[in-house]
Length: 162
Image 1 (cartoon, rainbow, N blue to C red):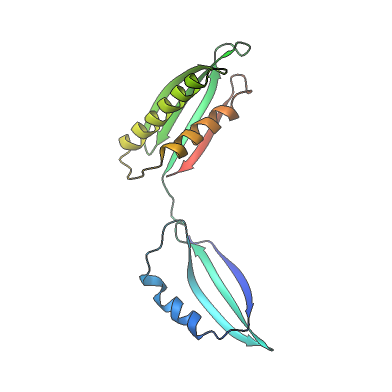
Image 2 (cartoon, rainbow, N blue to C red):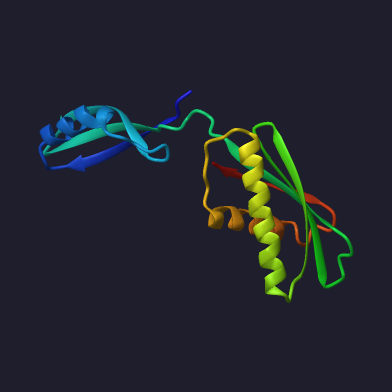
């Protein structure tokens, strides 16, 4: 099902160039995250021209997602933070245990690098063509870890469209 929304734009310019552009729109390469124009309705009103554009997203079909479920393990009062992260995409699942001391940046970076590798293995096991950047996967893992930091055993799930 395609979700659409209506926009109303007032313009004093002639509408012929806009119609020419819309005629060539289906032939332009459009990325999945951009809006595409589905239909345009023009009508004159008073001094100017009012254009009502019906737009929808071209990725209304479901996109593959990488999900990460994390929960904190170990002693909640110690300086060492221990987490279990489960990455899943498609039907593939991978689990990773991350342990670091908050004051040691090299341990945090090593844990995030391991999370990125585990996420890449999960995507490869699901036979997806997606190639998210290391930075995007690292931020995704870090935000998931931070969201569960004070949950004391509770788990949180984060999703990333790939």
